[in-house]
Length: 331
Image 1 (cartoon, rainbow, N blue to C red):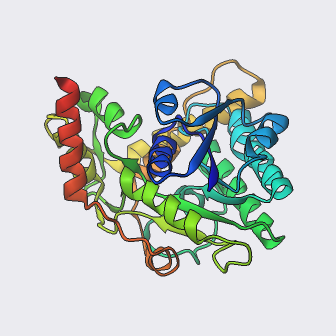
Image 2: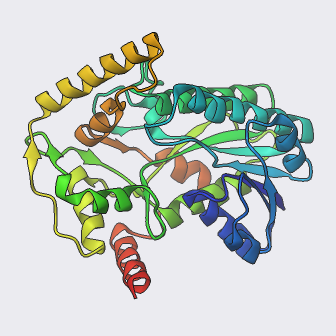
């Protein structure tokens, strides 16, 4: 099939492109700068901003399906940028899919249901959070709701919620853990349980959804959690990644109360700085504190039943692959 992958220069987007190209699909990509790796795969790169409706329509016009990976992630961007890229950009993709008859796999995030409390074995019936600790989860929730609403109007579309994607080439978690390992502290008296997902499993979920979603499919309009189905503690995950890179484990602990108080103080300072129009605002760390100090693992029954999803790469195998990749890169 002809497939467009938005955000193809990103971690998940590249992995999806590699799998699509390997099985013989015709792959188009939409991102802002040309990438030689994608040229080497023989892909057609559309260099444009997701916020440009005409460019989005042009990229999707010849495609049967879209895997929408593009998003502004993290916590340091401006609220306006998160909304324009994650919400308005998704609306542009939806409009183009509706016009050109393309079905849509939207990459969302479990953070859309995280309200700062423990999420232990929850499934997709859990409602969206009523408030959000940052612009990223808020914008992703709005974007996902746009996608599912469009499915209600007849567009074949579903949302995947992969959780904490890691593995070879990860530009987010391991590089930051490693760079700041001497400053890292675990929060609270004991770690909470989380689940994560290895990059190949996340990419496989995208292809499974792509192959099963058709017009009139009961999958349309649904969201699915995607993870390893191997819950572990937050500290165990951090230290496993560090060990794969040859670094010692983090053992220091910090009381959670003062950290939460500091995060709340900074949040108030950020609100005040925005209200006064100041050029600098404190970083919105409450989202990071909540992610590091609460449980978030999920019931994957729906993904197994509807998508045929099974994590093919175990956590142990993924860590071995990551260590081998890092050792090779080090040489």
